[in-house]
Length: 309
Image (tube, rainbow, N blue to C red; front, side, top):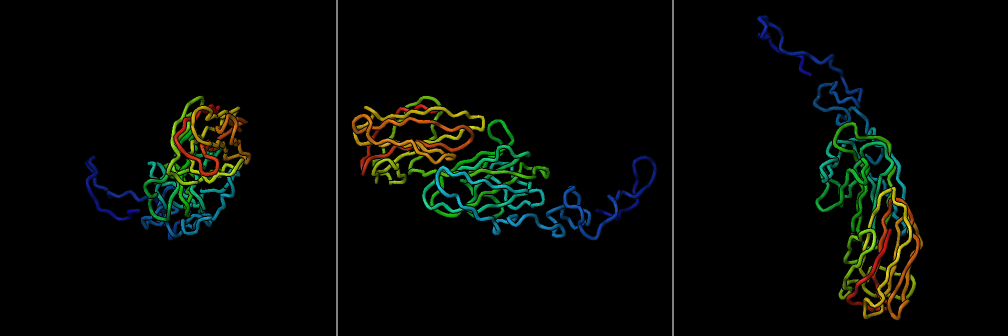
């Protein structure tokens, strides 16, 4: 873009202009995806106001509103960031230049909110935000690569309120294109823990916590705790088993929920006042959660045997 210079020694015994113009300056930016500043105003491609904005949700204040519906229901989002601009930096060190689009959603209860973009054909980045700004606020989930792919999988506990899902790309200008994102949500207790796949014994105490989860197989106004895991797309599912038999002195209840299936495995009394649940686990990427709950207002310390595929 520099079109004037001065005659200077070229180091080879000759004098020449020290500027090599990069072509004819254009009056406006006409090509918006080549990384060049054709009109020499210091703004490149989609950063130049001459280039039209992309989809309607290209700007955070114009985010597309979505409903997360009920636990077990998958919300599928399809879009294209090709003509979008970059507006918000993600805090996972990846989404700092690629274009992004925005979705807005509201949760009415404390929830585990999940999103993945498996199957998308470029290096996609997903992250949550509590508002609009130049950078993702600290404390919100952001992911670039999951399960050995260039696609993203994120999950976060969110309290009641309104939030944003940002669909972006890894760093470079070229990380853009059509995408498919799936969102799911499940209830979340005051205390939420990662659950390892396979066989494990988990211990906890529900005393003094809030009642966040409704098991559905018997009356419960008791406090609860949540254990969750989020496997990859290759996950084959299988059979799960969990029990508090001889592992608690109070009237426990157990429930197992899946973000991609509405059915709930739930039990109140199976061995005295303690509980046993078993059932099938669906395959594929999704959020899955085990809830340790109580009948009526029962609560206390416990251990729970868990076997999940």
